[in-house]
Length: 222
Image 1 (cartoon, one colour):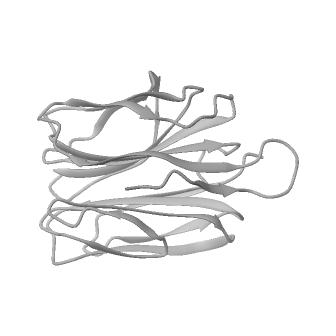
Image 2 (cartoon, one colour):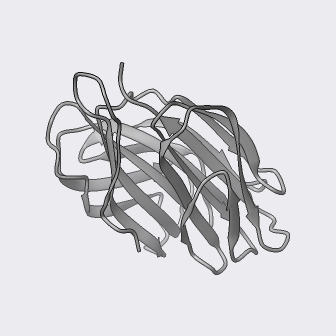
């Protein structure tokens, strides 16, 4: 389970400090087959200012189709990264919404069909740029890519695969690993040094038929 800690506070300069806090997590569950499922009364963080955004990194699957919409406390989220596995049954995404709400429902709706398994990680970002510094997706046999990191930046990645059990991350620190099929894992780092083309890799155990990785980085608003 996550720890509700202050993950990062960007240093100097005027204006609002850049802070990212992981506020909630829905460990993998099977809510029942539906085209739309709800994480009710999610903790969106204690800040209620207009400088707040909520970042959600998540997996959904068994019949994961492309996103139709994601709402966070009634606000339509912007999709920053989305990736489906080779057969499009497992998917991951990272989305963001600006909201002053401190709690609320997170509703994920896919474009067709039904899904019956998912995992969600929730982050409160204060004083950050809603447009990512960089992002990438991968469904390679060993999902990998490069990403730019700003000084004191925040970076998060989420991955899933079928017929796999665990992941080994390089380039980010693993924070959640389901450890069974369907495999799901989350990794992130904070207060990072500026870097161009940082390599992030999530290596699955075995040879899974489905792999879907999303990674995005963020920085202080200018």
